[in-house]
Length: 415
Image 1 (cartoon, rainbow, N blue to C red):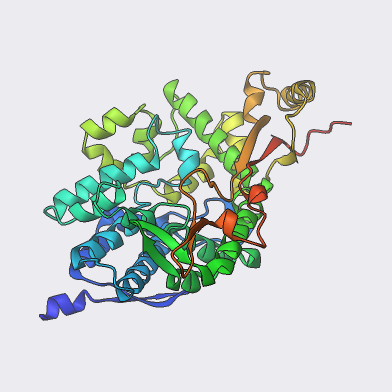
Image 2 (tube, rainbow, N blue to C red):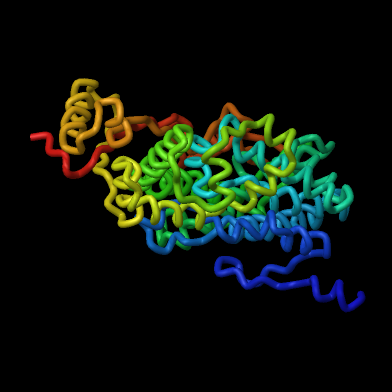
Protein backbone atom coordinates (compact mmCIF):
# COMPACT_ATOMS: atom_id res chain seq x y z
CA UNK A 1 0.00 0.00 0.00
CA UNK A 2 1.49 3.36 -0.98
CA UNK A 3 1.40 6.39 1.31
CA UNK A 4 -1.39 8.16 -0.57
CA UNK A 5 -3.76 5.17 -0.33
CA UNK A 6 -2.84 4.67 3.34
CA UNK A 7 -3.84 8.27 3.98
CA UNK A 8 -7.28 7.49 2.60
CA UNK A 9 -7.98 4.72 5.13
CA UNK A 10 -9.40 7.28 7.52
CA UNK A 11 -11.27 6.60 10.74
CA UNK A 12 -14.30 8.68 11.78
CA UNK A 13 -15.24 8.89 15.44
CA UNK A 14 -19.01 8.53 15.44
CA UNK A 15 -20.94 9.35 18.64
CA UNK A 16 -23.34 6.43 18.09
CA UNK A 17 -21.09 3.56 16.91
CA UNK A 18 -17.59 4.66 17.85
CA UNK A 19 -14.92 4.38 15.17
CA UNK A 20 -16.03 4.01 11.53
CA UNK A 21 -13.33 2.96 9.06
CA UNK A 22 -13.45 4.10 5.43
CA UNK A 23 -13.09 0.79 3.53
CA UNK A 24 -11.28 1.90 0.36
CA UNK A 25 -9.94 4.79 -1.69
CA UNK A 26 -13.03 5.08 -3.92
CA UNK A 27 -15.40 5.54 -0.98
CA UNK A 28 -12.95 8.00 0.60
CA UNK A 29 -12.93 10.06 -2.61
CA UNK A 30 -16.75 9.98 -2.86
CA UNK A 31 -17.02 11.23 0.73
CA UNK A 32 -14.51 13.99 -0.06
CA UNK A 33 -16.50 15.19 -3.09
CA UNK A 34 -18.32 18.54 -2.61
CA UNK A 35 -21.69 16.89 -3.43
CA UNK A 36 -21.30 14.66 -0.38
CA UNK A 37 -19.60 17.21 1.86
CA UNK A 38 -22.69 19.41 1.43
CA UNK A 39 -24.57 16.93 3.64
CA UNK A 40 -22.55 18.25 6.59
CA UNK A 41 -24.55 21.47 6.20
CA UNK A 42 -28.00 19.87 6.13
CA UNK A 43 -29.60 18.81 9.39
CA UNK A 44 -31.09 15.33 9.44
CA UNK A 45 -34.22 16.39 11.30
CA UNK A 46 -34.88 19.83 9.79
CA UNK A 47 -36.56 22.04 12.38
CA UNK A 48 -36.95 19.35 15.05
CA UNK A 49 -34.28 21.10 17.12
CA UNK A 50 -36.93 23.71 17.94
CA UNK A 51 -38.55 20.98 20.06
CA UNK A 52 -35.53 18.76 20.82
CA UNK A 53 -32.48 21.06 21.17
CA UNK A 54 -30.02 18.21 20.67
CA UNK A 55 -31.36 17.28 17.22
CA UNK A 56 -28.59 19.10 15.36
CA UNK A 57 -27.02 16.08 13.68
CA UNK A 58 -26.64 16.12 9.91
CA UNK A 59 -27.37 13.96 6.89
CA UNK A 60 -23.61 13.43 6.69
CA UNK A 61 -23.72 11.75 10.13
CA UNK A 62 -26.64 9.57 9.05
CA UNK A 63 -25.13 8.54 5.71
CA UNK A 64 -21.84 7.56 7.35
CA UNK A 65 -23.72 5.59 10.02
CA UNK A 66 -25.86 3.77 7.47
CA UNK A 67 -22.71 2.81 5.54
CA UNK A 68 -21.21 1.43 8.76
CA UNK A 69 -24.29 -0.72 9.39
CA UNK A 70 -24.25 -1.91 5.76
CA UNK A 71 -20.66 -3.09 6.12
CA UNK A 72 -21.60 -4.90 9.35
CA UNK A 73 -24.56 -6.58 7.61
CA UNK A 74 -22.50 -7.68 4.60
CA UNK A 75 -19.80 -9.13 6.89
CA UNK A 76 -22.40 -11.11 8.88
CA UNK A 77 -24.04 -12.49 5.70
CA UNK A 78 -20.68 -13.49 4.25
CA UNK A 79 -19.81 -15.26 7.50
CA UNK A 80 -23.05 -17.22 7.14
CA UNK A 81 -21.85 -18.53 3.79
CA UNK A 82 -23.61 -16.22 1.33
CA UNK A 83 -21.68 -15.33 -1.80
CA UNK A 84 -21.09 -11.58 -1.90
CA UNK A 85 -18.16 -10.37 -3.99
CA UNK A 86 -15.88 -7.47 -3.06
CA UNK A 87 -17.45 -5.46 -5.89
CA UNK A 88 -20.95 -6.13 -4.51
CA UNK A 89 -19.83 -5.28 -0.97
CA UNK A 90 -18.39 -1.99 -2.17
CA UNK A 91 -21.49 -1.33 -4.32
CA UNK A 92 -23.84 -1.87 -1.38
CA UNK A 93 -21.78 0.50 0.75
CA UNK A 94 -21.86 3.15 -2.00
CA UNK A 95 -25.62 2.71 -2.55
CA UNK A 96 -26.44 3.34 1.12
CA UNK A 97 -23.81 6.07 1.47
CA UNK A 98 -25.43 8.04 -1.37
CA UNK A 99 -29.10 7.20 -0.69
CA UNK A 100 -29.76 10.70 0.72
CA UNK A 101 -27.41 12.75 -1.45
CA UNK A 102 -30.32 14.45 -3.26
CA UNK A 103 -31.79 15.97 -0.09
CA UNK A 104 -31.95 19.74 -0.08
CA UNK A 105 -32.13 21.96 2.99
CA UNK A 106 -35.27 21.24 5.04
CA UNK A 107 -35.81 18.60 2.38
CA UNK A 108 -39.54 17.95 2.14
CA UNK A 109 -40.33 21.60 2.80
CA UNK A 110 -38.12 22.69 -0.10
CA UNK A 111 -39.61 20.08 -2.43
CA UNK A 112 -43.06 21.60 -1.93
CA UNK A 113 -42.11 25.23 -2.32
CA UNK A 114 -38.94 26.05 -4.27
CA UNK A 115 -38.29 23.24 -6.77
CA UNK A 116 -41.08 21.82 -8.91
CA UNK A 117 -42.03 18.24 -9.71
CA UNK A 118 -38.72 16.75 -8.58
CA UNK A 119 -38.16 14.75 -5.41
CA UNK A 120 -35.00 14.14 -3.42
CA UNK A 121 -35.05 10.56 -4.79
CA UNK A 122 -34.92 11.95 -8.34
CA UNK A 123 -32.03 14.21 -7.38
CA UNK A 124 -30.17 11.37 -5.65
CA UNK A 125 -30.33 9.36 -8.89
CA UNK A 126 -29.00 12.32 -10.90
CA UNK A 127 -26.16 12.94 -8.44
CA UNK A 128 -25.18 9.26 -8.55
CA UNK A 129 -25.03 9.35 -12.35
CA UNK A 130 -22.87 12.48 -12.25
CA UNK A 131 -20.52 10.95 -9.65
CA UNK A 132 -20.31 7.79 -11.75
CA UNK A 133 -18.98 9.93 -14.61
CA UNK A 134 -16.52 11.68 -12.28
CA UNK A 135 -15.20 8.32 -11.03
CA UNK A 136 -15.04 6.64 -14.46
CA UNK A 137 -17.91 4.19 -14.04
CA UNK A 138 -16.80 2.82 -10.67
CA UNK A 139 -20.24 3.46 -9.13
CA UNK A 140 -21.99 1.15 -11.62
CA UNK A 141 -22.67 -1.69 -9.17
CA UNK A 142 -23.76 0.72 -6.44
CA UNK A 143 -26.23 2.40 -8.78
CA UNK A 144 -27.61 -0.97 -9.90
CA UNK A 145 -28.17 -1.95 -6.25
CA UNK A 146 -29.75 1.41 -5.44
CA UNK A 147 -32.18 1.10 -8.39
CA UNK A 148 -32.93 -2.58 -7.68
CA UNK A 149 -31.42 -3.57 -11.04
CA UNK A 150 -28.78 -5.88 -9.60
CA UNK A 151 -29.30 -9.65 -9.90
CA UNK A 152 -29.03 -10.12 -6.11
CA UNK A 153 -32.22 -8.43 -4.96
CA UNK A 154 -31.44 -8.79 -1.25
CA UNK A 155 -28.70 -6.17 -1.65
CA UNK A 156 -31.32 -3.58 -2.59
CA UNK A 157 -33.42 -4.67 0.40
CA UNK A 158 -30.52 -3.72 2.65
CA UNK A 159 -30.70 -0.21 1.13
CA UNK A 160 -34.46 0.20 0.87
CA UNK A 161 -37.10 -1.97 2.55
CA UNK A 162 -39.03 -2.16 5.79
CA UNK A 163 -35.90 -3.39 7.51
CA UNK A 164 -33.04 -1.54 5.81
CA UNK A 165 -29.83 0.02 7.07
CA UNK A 166 -31.31 3.48 6.51
CA UNK A 167 -34.09 2.87 9.06
CA UNK A 168 -31.84 1.10 11.53
CA UNK A 169 -29.45 4.05 11.57
CA UNK A 170 -31.94 6.91 11.67
CA UNK A 171 -33.98 5.37 14.50
CA UNK A 172 -30.89 4.73 16.61
CA UNK A 173 -29.27 8.08 15.71
CA UNK A 174 -32.37 10.25 16.02
CA UNK A 175 -33.28 8.76 19.40
CA UNK A 176 -29.69 9.40 20.55
CA UNK A 177 -29.63 13.06 19.51
CA UNK A 178 -33.19 13.92 20.54
CA UNK A 179 -32.94 12.07 23.84
CA UNK A 180 -36.18 10.21 23.08
CA UNK A 181 -35.41 6.84 24.66
CA UNK A 182 -38.53 5.19 23.20
CA UNK A 183 -36.73 5.09 19.85
CA UNK A 184 -33.76 3.06 21.05
CA UNK A 185 -33.32 -0.18 19.07
CA UNK A 186 -30.74 -2.97 19.16
CA UNK A 187 -29.40 -2.56 15.61
CA UNK A 188 -26.41 -4.79 16.36
CA UNK A 189 -28.67 -7.67 17.42
CA UNK A 190 -30.94 -7.23 14.37
CA UNK A 191 -27.97 -7.29 11.98
CA UNK A 192 -26.52 -10.41 13.62
CA UNK A 193 -29.90 -12.14 13.08
CA UNK A 194 -30.01 -11.35 9.33
CA UNK A 195 -30.40 -14.23 6.91
CA UNK A 196 -31.09 -14.58 3.17
CA UNK A 197 -33.87 -16.87 1.93
CA UNK A 198 -34.84 -17.06 -1.75
CA UNK A 199 -32.87 -13.88 -2.52
CA UNK A 200 -34.81 -12.00 0.16
CA UNK A 201 -33.95 -10.80 3.64
CA UNK A 202 -35.21 -12.67 6.68
CA UNK A 203 -34.59 -12.62 10.41
CA UNK A 204 -33.68 -15.71 12.39
CA UNK A 205 -36.48 -16.64 14.81
CA UNK A 206 -34.43 -15.88 17.90
CA UNK A 207 -34.28 -12.23 16.77
CA UNK A 208 -38.06 -11.79 16.74
CA UNK A 209 -38.22 -9.68 19.90
CA UNK A 210 -35.66 -7.23 18.51
CA UNK A 211 -37.90 -6.80 15.45
CA UNK A 212 -40.97 -6.23 17.63
CA UNK A 213 -39.04 -3.55 19.51
CA UNK A 214 -37.90 -2.02 16.20
CA UNK A 215 -41.47 -1.68 14.89
CA UNK A 216 -42.80 -0.22 18.14
CA UNK A 217 -39.85 2.19 18.34
CA UNK A 218 -40.54 3.32 14.77
CA UNK A 219 -44.18 4.04 15.62
CA UNK A 220 -43.31 5.98 18.77
CA UNK A 221 -40.56 7.99 17.07
CA UNK A 222 -42.96 9.10 14.37
CA UNK A 223 -45.48 10.56 16.79
CA UNK A 224 -42.92 11.83 19.27
CA UNK A 225 -40.35 13.28 16.89
CA UNK A 226 -40.97 13.17 13.13
CA UNK A 227 -44.67 14.10 13.31
CA UNK A 228 -44.57 16.00 16.61
CA UNK A 229 -47.23 18.67 16.33
CA UNK A 230 -44.87 21.57 17.07
CA UNK A 231 -42.37 20.27 14.49
CA UNK A 232 -45.22 20.04 11.97
CA UNK A 233 -46.17 23.65 12.70
CA UNK A 234 -42.59 24.85 12.22
CA UNK A 235 -42.12 22.93 8.97
CA UNK A 236 -45.41 24.15 7.51
CA UNK A 237 -44.57 27.72 8.53
CA UNK A 238 -41.26 27.40 6.69
CA UNK A 239 -43.10 25.99 3.68
CA UNK A 240 -45.44 29.00 3.76
CA UNK A 241 -42.61 31.55 4.01
CA UNK A 242 -40.82 29.93 1.07
CA UNK A 243 -44.04 29.94 -0.96
CA UNK A 244 -44.48 33.63 -0.17
CA UNK A 245 -40.89 34.31 -1.22
CA UNK A 246 -41.44 32.40 -4.45
CA UNK A 247 -44.66 34.35 -5.11
CA UNK A 248 -42.87 37.69 -4.55
CA UNK A 249 -39.93 36.62 -6.71
CA UNK A 250 -42.34 35.76 -9.54
CA UNK A 251 -43.74 39.30 -9.18
CA UNK A 252 -40.23 40.69 -9.63
CA UNK A 253 -39.90 41.82 -6.00
CA UNK A 254 -36.29 42.09 -4.87
CA UNK A 255 -35.39 39.56 -2.16
CA UNK A 256 -32.14 38.98 -0.33
CA UNK A 257 -30.76 35.52 -1.13
CA UNK A 258 -27.46 33.79 -1.79
CA UNK A 259 -26.54 33.24 -5.44
CA UNK A 260 -27.73 29.61 -5.47
CA UNK A 261 -30.92 30.29 -3.51
CA UNK A 262 -31.74 33.28 -5.71
CA UNK A 263 -31.49 31.12 -8.84
CA UNK A 264 -34.17 28.76 -7.50
CA UNK A 265 -36.37 31.56 -6.19
CA UNK A 266 -36.44 33.49 -9.46
CA UNK A 267 -36.67 30.50 -11.83
CA UNK A 268 -39.20 27.68 -11.98
CA UNK A 269 -36.94 24.71 -12.59
CA UNK A 270 -38.48 21.26 -12.95
CA UNK A 271 -37.29 17.69 -13.43
CA UNK A 272 -36.64 18.14 -17.15
CA UNK A 273 -34.45 21.17 -16.46
CA UNK A 274 -32.31 19.15 -14.04
CA UNK A 275 -31.96 16.36 -16.58
CA UNK A 276 -31.10 18.68 -19.48
CA UNK A 277 -28.97 21.28 -17.68
CA UNK A 278 -26.12 19.57 -15.81
CA UNK A 279 -25.05 22.89 -14.28
CA UNK A 280 -28.26 22.90 -12.21
CA UNK A 281 -26.96 19.99 -10.13
CA UNK A 282 -23.87 22.01 -9.24
CA UNK A 283 -26.08 24.97 -8.37
CA UNK A 284 -28.38 22.85 -6.21
CA UNK A 285 -25.37 21.36 -4.44
CA UNK A 286 -24.51 24.87 -3.20
CA UNK A 287 -27.82 25.06 -1.31
CA UNK A 288 -27.89 24.12 2.35
CA UNK A 289 -29.57 25.06 5.63
CA UNK A 290 -27.43 28.19 5.93
CA UNK A 291 -28.81 29.69 2.70
CA UNK A 292 -32.35 29.41 4.01
CA UNK A 293 -31.65 30.62 7.54
CA UNK A 294 -29.56 33.57 6.34
CA UNK A 295 -32.39 34.62 4.01
CA UNK A 296 -34.97 34.32 6.80
CA UNK A 297 -32.89 36.54 9.08
CA UNK A 298 -32.82 39.23 6.38
CA UNK A 299 -36.47 38.78 5.40
CA UNK A 300 -37.50 39.66 8.97
CA UNK A 301 -36.89 43.27 7.84
CA UNK A 302 -38.61 43.00 4.44
CA UNK A 303 -41.51 45.42 3.77
CA UNK A 304 -43.83 42.54 2.81
CA UNK A 305 -45.66 41.93 6.10
CA UNK A 306 -46.42 38.25 5.39
CA UNK A 307 -42.81 37.41 4.52
CA UNK A 308 -41.39 39.40 7.43
CA UNK A 309 -43.83 38.09 10.04
CA UNK A 310 -43.40 34.43 9.12
CA UNK A 311 -39.60 34.86 8.98
CA UNK A 312 -39.63 36.53 12.40
CA UNK A 313 -41.71 33.70 13.84
CA UNK A 314 -39.31 30.99 12.64
CA UNK A 315 -36.08 32.83 13.51
CA UNK A 316 -37.30 33.69 17.01
CA UNK A 317 -39.30 30.49 17.59
CA UNK A 318 -42.67 32.19 17.80
CA UNK A 319 -44.46 29.17 16.43
CA UNK A 320 -48.17 28.99 15.67
CA UNK A 321 -50.72 27.26 17.84
CA UNK A 322 -51.39 23.67 16.73
CA UNK A 323 -54.60 21.77 17.27
CA UNK A 324 -54.61 18.08 16.41
CA UNK A 325 -57.51 15.64 16.21
CA UNK A 326 -58.67 12.44 14.53
CA UNK A 327 -61.30 13.97 12.25
CA UNK A 328 -61.23 16.84 9.80
CA UNK A 329 -61.65 20.33 11.21
CA UNK A 330 -64.97 22.09 10.87
CA UNK A 331 -64.74 24.39 7.85
CA UNK A 332 -66.76 27.08 9.63
CA UNK A 333 -64.18 27.15 12.42
CA UNK A 334 -61.31 27.43 9.94
CA UNK A 335 -63.14 30.23 8.10
CA UNK A 336 -63.75 32.10 11.36
CA UNK A 337 -60.05 31.92 12.25
CA UNK A 338 -59.14 33.20 8.78
CA UNK A 339 -61.49 36.15 9.17
CA UNK A 340 -60.05 37.03 12.58
CA UNK A 341 -56.51 36.67 11.19
CA UNK A 342 -57.33 38.82 8.17
CA UNK A 343 -58.64 41.55 10.45
CA UNK A 344 -55.83 41.39 13.01
CA UNK A 345 -52.98 41.41 10.48
CA UNK A 346 -54.60 43.69 7.92
CA UNK A 347 -54.35 41.16 5.09
CA UNK A 348 -56.85 39.74 2.63
CA UNK A 349 -58.83 36.56 3.32
CA UNK A 350 -56.87 34.90 0.49
CA UNK A 351 -53.55 35.84 2.09
CA UNK A 352 -54.70 34.54 5.47
CA UNK A 353 -53.94 31.09 4.02
CA UNK A 354 -50.30 31.85 4.84
CA UNK A 355 -51.19 32.11 8.54
CA UNK A 356 -54.08 29.65 8.88
CA UNK A 357 -53.72 26.18 7.43
CA UNK A 358 -54.95 22.66 8.00
CA UNK A 359 -53.67 19.33 6.72
CA UNK A 360 -53.43 15.66 7.65
CA UNK A 361 -50.53 13.42 8.53
CA UNK A 362 -50.42 9.62 8.41
CA UNK A 363 -48.16 7.16 10.22
CA UNK A 364 -47.58 3.54 9.13
CA UNK A 365 -45.30 1.58 11.45
CA UNK A 366 -45.47 -1.50 9.24
CA UNK A 367 -46.92 -2.35 5.83
CA UNK A 368 -47.34 -6.13 5.57
CA UNK A 369 -48.69 -5.77 2.02
CA UNK A 370 -45.34 -4.32 0.88
CA UNK A 371 -43.05 -7.37 1.11
CA UNK A 372 -43.01 -7.48 4.89
CA UNK A 373 -40.40 -8.69 7.36
CA UNK A 374 -39.95 -12.46 7.29
CA UNK A 375 -39.01 -14.62 10.26
CA UNK A 376 -37.20 -17.89 9.47
CA UNK A 377 -37.34 -20.87 11.82
CA UNK A 378 -34.78 -23.65 12.21
CA UNK A 379 -36.91 -26.02 10.12
CA UNK A 380 -36.89 -23.51 7.23
CA UNK A 381 -40.44 -22.28 7.79
CA UNK A 382 -40.98 -18.63 6.84
CA UNK A 383 -43.58 -16.43 8.52
CA UNK A 384 -44.36 -12.75 8.29
CA UNK A 385 -43.62 -10.97 11.58
CA UNK A 386 -47.35 -10.35 11.98
CA UNK A 387 -48.06 -14.09 12.04
CA UNK A 388 -44.91 -15.05 13.91
CA UNK A 389 -45.24 -12.68 16.83
CA UNK A 390 -47.09 -13.76 19.95
CA UNK A 391 -46.65 -10.35 21.56
CA UNK A 392 -47.19 -7.90 18.76
CA UNK A 393 -50.63 -6.94 17.56
CA UNK A 394 -49.54 -6.36 13.99
CA UNK A 395 -53.05 -5.40 12.92
CA UNK A 396 -52.67 -2.32 15.11
CA UNK A 397 -49.16 -1.46 13.88
CA UNK A 398 -50.04 -2.03 10.23
CA UNK A 399 -53.13 0.14 10.36
CA UNK A 400 -52.48 3.71 9.20
CA UNK A 401 -53.08 6.29 11.89
CA UNK A 402 -54.29 9.55 10.37
CA UNK A 403 -54.42 12.79 12.32
CA UNK A 404 -55.61 16.21 11.22
CA UNK A 405 -53.98 19.40 12.41
CA UNK A 406 -54.82 23.10 12.32
CA UNK A 407 -52.25 25.90 12.71
CA UNK A 408 -52.81 29.62 13.30
CA UNK A 409 -51.11 32.49 15.17
CA UNK A 410 -51.31 32.31 18.95
CA UNK A 411 -52.53 35.91 19.07
CA UNK A 412 -55.83 34.87 17.53
CA UNK A 413 -58.44 34.39 20.27
CA UNK A 414 -61.40 32.18 19.45
CA UNK A 415 -63.51 33.08 22.45
